[in-house]
Image 1 (tube, rainbow, N blue to C red):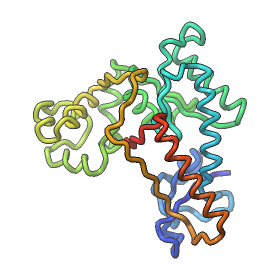
Image 2 (image 1 turned 30 degrees about the vertical axis):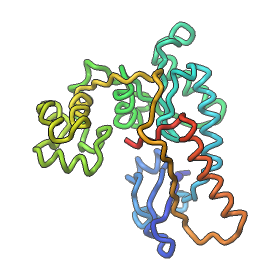
Image 3 (image 1 turned 45 degrees about the vertical axis):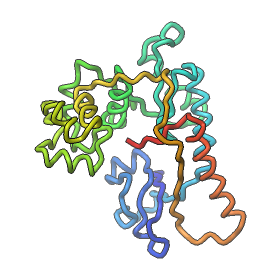
Image 4 (image 1 turned 120 degrees about the vertical axis):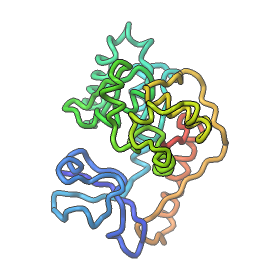
Length: 269
């Protein structure tokens, strides 16, 4: 069975709805990806389209976080988003083995207890771990990819398109294109001073990212620049029943509470 989670941009035309998430098999066999439209999905009986169930999603997320805490301390765990986390396993080697061995044990534990598949990116810093996850782990047979400093030229520089690079969205990419930067490799060879001049601190940061350099330490407390938190949700139909309305509001409040707790920084990459 292939699963696709949908959201809808127009309650009167659900064919315009877009994909929030899809199972690996649906992505592989049909090229379905996040932001694909409903009308792009083949109408096969074995493709199941489901509405988001955030209450269940949050509950499972809490259970998986508890598993992470079996392998690392709270100080070495950073929840990047609702379904991604960074773990610094440096202090766990004595108990659980090498980084790769720990990754395999976490994968096996989650599979044995909940039959959930987890993909893992391993790197010398959070940046490289994230890039390994997004660009390689999901394509490997065992769902694990390792990227290290000595591999930058064959990994990070080959990320394509440039918007697949961490912290480079469409707007930033368009600004970089105007400078003649159309790839991560060309970003790595550009002047760091010029990037800082045109894009301020983010420009200099992107230059170092292109070389695999990230000096952030998970154990250091994250201090947000703003205390503002928000959550929006597009519904696939009109909600009239009071109970259903309250469920949606509670789910959204739970997500905001998780961000407010400091466990999730709300950064979207």
